[in-house]
Length: 304
Image (tube, rainbow, N blue to C red; front, side, top):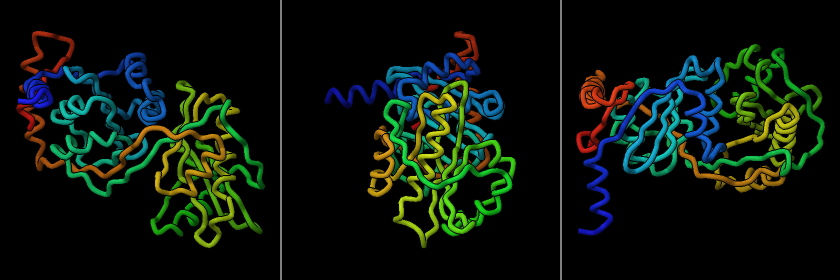
């Protein structure tokens, strides 16, 4: 038997300590090894978002893992850390019936497929910038407000999917647009702005199909990034398709640096009525009762 196989079997027989956490300092510490990778989860530590999020941690022989299930910005799941730990958490706390996997590492997908149908998979890459590396790009753009919501939704619809951003959502976020004779041609905005974490996630970058290749998306992304850094963000993060060379080059021009590989996908739980996770939770709670503190002991050999 090879050493690798022995290790795999040892992990399979091992117990992972799983528990729910509302301790912001603990969660911040666990998520801060790669803040760009963990940006969505860190952003949900803001009070108004955390109220609609659940965080689960796992500790075991393979290391640490953290999983977030949230309903603040749609149904979203984030998985960070040791794949076996992710598997332990998801086996007893798989989240909502369906959700968008906004952040996972590539090696999480095989274990997620044990509890979920994983579809519409996107292989992406994080990029991040700070005030030291940022290279501004001046251009004729303007800050978008709530009254621009109809224009923004119309532009996003040109990409083939309907959009229903409200005036309040646009007003709360940071959006910039590029115009020609009053017509909105390009837009960039934010998914999350976290003052307490000094972190923001840029997204929703789109140029009208007939006006691409003119650098408009780069200009509006620069404007959003500039505002966020001036407002006190120490790091601004975005996600890009690594094979989209023009986008990667454009963001690199602004000072964004390439980071970790990220998987995005749609998740659908494979259990029909939720009985399997409930039974596993019951067993895990029984095992963990002696340890106290709401610890659940998950045996991975019973998951696979």
